[in-house]
Amino acid sequence: MRHVDFSPLYRSTVGFDRLFTMLDSLAQPEQAQTYPPYNIERTGENTYRITMAVAGFDETELSIEAHAHVLSVKGEKAEEPAESGEYLYRGIAKRAFERRFQLADHVEVTAASLKNGLLHIDLLRNIPEAMKPRKIAIAAEPVEAPKAIEAQVING
Image (tube, rainbow, N blue to C red; front, side):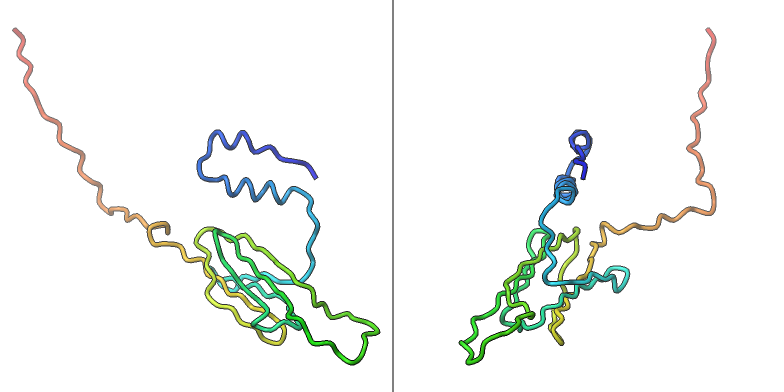
């Protein structure tokens, strides 16, 4: 994959450092993490839901943390007591994981629930009133132009 040079944009923009860093990190090949599988869906105009398949984990073995525009989901399986039998095949993953999601400005976690092996994390983009677009009323009648001051010119 090609590397994109963002340095010309740094000269004419202010406050977009996080965006450029995120774009640059996406361009770099990294080890693709596939566990646990997840979905990201838009459930409304300003609401989202992340659903992760975390079969075998319970609430005490999962932690969710939102800090500085990053949502981290960690899972760490507790040690199980030794069982009397031995596994002939072990296909159910018990490995620890950490999955990170970049959050946009004003996106916050509103709820999290675990049901049937699926962890649901609900998100809300809460834009402050001052940042929302506002409608500007247009007057139906033209506004009177300021009157010019008449002056007499005396030729002398």
